[in-house]
Length: 208
Image (cartoon, rainbow, N blue to C red; front, side):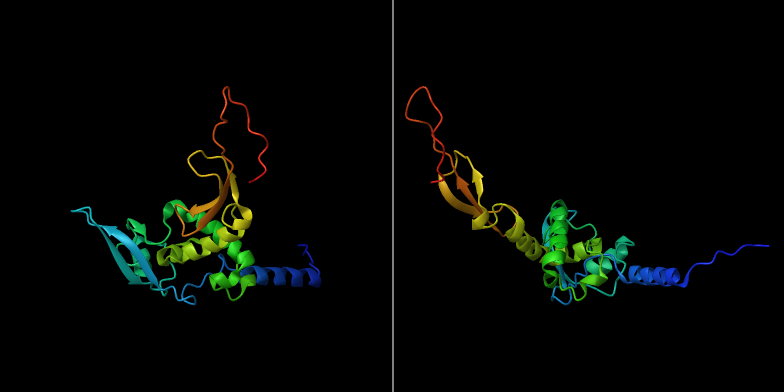
């Protein structure tokens, strides 16, 4: 005679609700490129004969929902030659980690920036298709700039970096970030050499 394990009804309901909630949460942050009007994939391709680069613009085919399945599927979504592109017009491979960090921040702090209608329905970590959509359209730059201005040291006048650089003038200045369309702010404490020999340390910097 086989024994049957009896599970209380309350436990069954709890398990059912947990499974239902888990099924409703999708991987990603819910980035909706179409809702934000980001529908053009822009990338550079290289002529194999001349080595010359040319830009291509392609209307993203959002009906291709599994673009990572093959190179052909990739190019159906993002355009002919995009699988072997030289680079996206927006952030490319070496900057994707920063884009991913920015998307994680935006999901928690500014979901509207991602076009997210229902944050509770998403895992909160961008998937690869979302990152590729944002890089292909260049919208990733918008998200990174917002993220930087909110969190990076030096990306706001209120959070100036303190440096000691003899190649720059002393005081408060700003300059363009080398990768992003972003102004970086700093205070340079360098004073040069004391007008004596041998040198002695300058008195404590008052910040002026």
